[in-house]
Image (cartoon, rainbow, N blue to C red; front, side, top):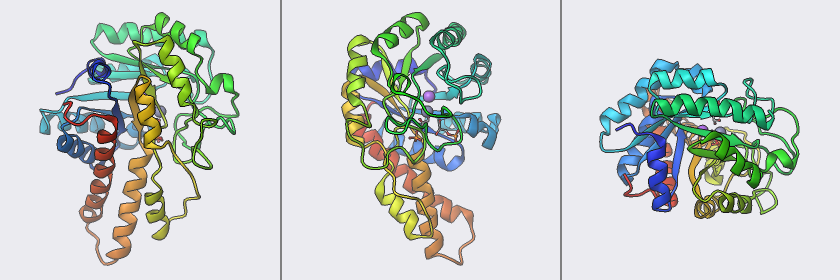
Length: 328
Ligand code: G3H
Ligand code: 13P
Ligand code: NA
Ligand code: ZN
């Protein structure tokens, strides 16, 4: 069934695990996620970005999620709107039947300009009032995603600050986080700890200097009862980069967030882990490899099915690592 996010995150906190939140844009991603959830008996969060709405259209996205609930009635599914850029966007998602919305007030409605604390509190509080009246959960965000080394938000064209940011914005402040949660009453709080969206997070494997898992611990100490969210949490598997590049791709060397670092963050109160890029990389690698091996094939179902298997296996691995297996 469709469930509110608060319900799943409360359960995850009680049993000390975290939910991956996978982005969906099309049928193949949805099938991969649901087959993995079914295989591992895991609850799941599926989320739609503004980019997904532009690609598939809101009605198709909505019905993909409803179809997942219909085909897998035994799996609890959160239908979450990722990175809402204004209260109006969140209101529209609530109207469409989303059970959870993110109001990302860390950036202005252009998705690029960093905002001040007062703006963030005001828009987030407005969404909480509206959403809670409808039984819908709310994720807020305090701090801006971006590299602690370069101050850049990453290569993703969607959500991300423009220009260079300093550490006061790139690392969420624990005291400010406590004040933000008290003022807004959000159900979950996304924090900034040095990750960014997309494949280009780190120029070398991250260290404590570039990926501040310790900051998660500090925030959790101030907010022991708040569900924390990590964005930009793809691991950028080196084996998929190699498969892409061995079959005509040209992705420069790059690193993501190691799964074992996410597991450490889960011990410090992270309950939702956003993953999009890993499924994109796996799908691209699987399709490139299939096309190279089967140059005469032209039935899209053949190569798209390879992408489903590759994405499904990533989802299964994340459900297992984050402690979701058997929690449905
Ligand atoms: O928030 C970032 C997600 O990876 C969604 O990306 O806007 O390209 O769909 P997108
Ligand atoms: P990745 O680009 O690391 O997969 O992050 C996705 C995300 O945070 C969506 O909100
Ligand atoms: Na989100
Ligand atoms: Zn995000």
